[in-house]
Amino acid sequence: MMKIDLEFSTSLLICLLPFLLIFFINLFNSKSTKIPKSYPIIGSYFSILANKHRRIQWTSDVIQTTTNLTFTLIRPFGFRQIFTANPSNVQYILKTHFHIYQKGHVFKSTMADFLGDGIFNVDGEIWKYQRQVASHEFNTKSLRKFIETVVDAELNERLIPFLAVAAAEKKVVDFQDILQRFAFDNICKIAFGYDPAYLLPSLPQAKFAVAFEEAVKLSSERFNAIFPFSWKIKRRFNFGTEKKFRIAVDEVRQFAKQLVKEKQREVNEKSSLDSVDLLSRFLSVGHTDEDFVTDIVISFILAGRDTTSAALTWFFWLISEHPVVESFILNEIKSKSESPVYDEVKEMIYTHASLCESTRFYPPVPIDTKTATEDNVLPDGTFVKKGTRVSYHPYAMGRAEKLWGKDSDKFKPERWLDKDEVAGNWNFVTKDMYTYPVFQAGPRICLGKEMAFLQMKRVVAGVLRRFKVVPVTEKGVEPVFISYLTAKMKGGFHVTIEERDH
Image (cartoon, rainbow, N blue to C red; front, side, top):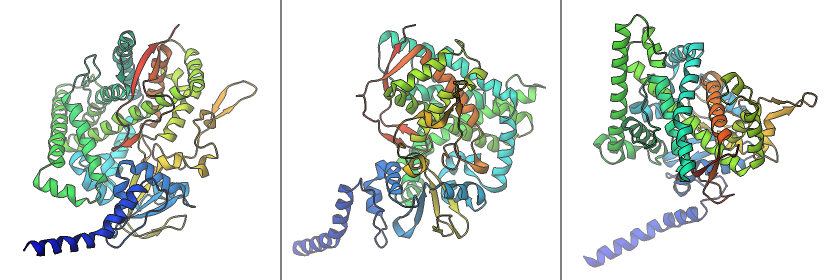
């Protein structure tokens, strides 16, 4: 019996040897920029596995080696995924053939537990209706004014005082965490009219905020699973990460629904609402379906919570590495009033260019995926079969020499500017949105783009006027870029805060 077991083990090892050899070759070549080799049944499994912790950088590196900035990855069992950084393809996907490229079943089924039928998880008429409702609200002056008031209050009453204490005590803080807390307070007040008070001196672990963070992280793990059936099995039997995910999602959705019910009572009891948050607006114009309102508001929290904080985190790191750029920004800030109104912030052209340049390198959403609903051919000649997932890659696009020139690897806000030699002023030069699709493009272009820039410039002006943000890591060492549903800095952004000498 022992002899049979030994023979069986030896035979099994011999059978597995080629696969083990392939795995270790791929592991040692995990930074290879060549299009990964594909094998029968398993596809490029070993390359995917070897690069699972740097998938954004890996797929970007591969794209840069292609002539058309596009390649096809063969996943296990023959599933294909196309990655592209070609602006012609991006315009084709996001605009001219928008009707063909939709969220698709994979995306919707993966996010359904968390986002339900919110605007970021639907297609067709449901999406069109939500887009019209949201677009109308975002274009009202009263909402814009409300957002300005909320951001200014959070900045002056919480963020600036927190940084002042950190500077006085000379303590190290995780600035990424602080900016996320700042953004979470803002978006909850804007979306629900609810203040989670997440950015307090004690840095509390607010239950709703922690559950939301957990839900986002575990949603991302679903997307990144090499074998999607693995998370589906765990969900079916309610164990492991899927059990944690269910608990987090239940916490988020129950809390959100409770807020909806309380706000609905307020609407019913009053002829007019004192609050102008998004939830109040939706309810006051007759959108009373609890699930509909909950879904759409959770989607807006997701959009507003991570995108601006991610953009600002990388921005502050980049300017710490480029003191000349920081000095130009500081001069622009000092030319404005002590507490600039939003009309003044809007005119901060050099700061705006610096934010565009930082998001070129580190887009808050580094990759986005659509599904083809019929056979078609991309402008670069790539054939796309019905059901194929096609990912456009803002992270790769921002690093493509073919798109940005030989200095594409340089942080250079001036590439977004044109100087008026007579007046001596900078003029902002808008880039093609399909070369810089950081805020999407076409019919799904981000509704909050303008407000996001105004908020970020207001934060930059408020922080840099008074403080210098100094990373504690060695100068020149780039933090590790990771992505859940949105970008993060691995391990946080640890800094000290220094008061400027006025």
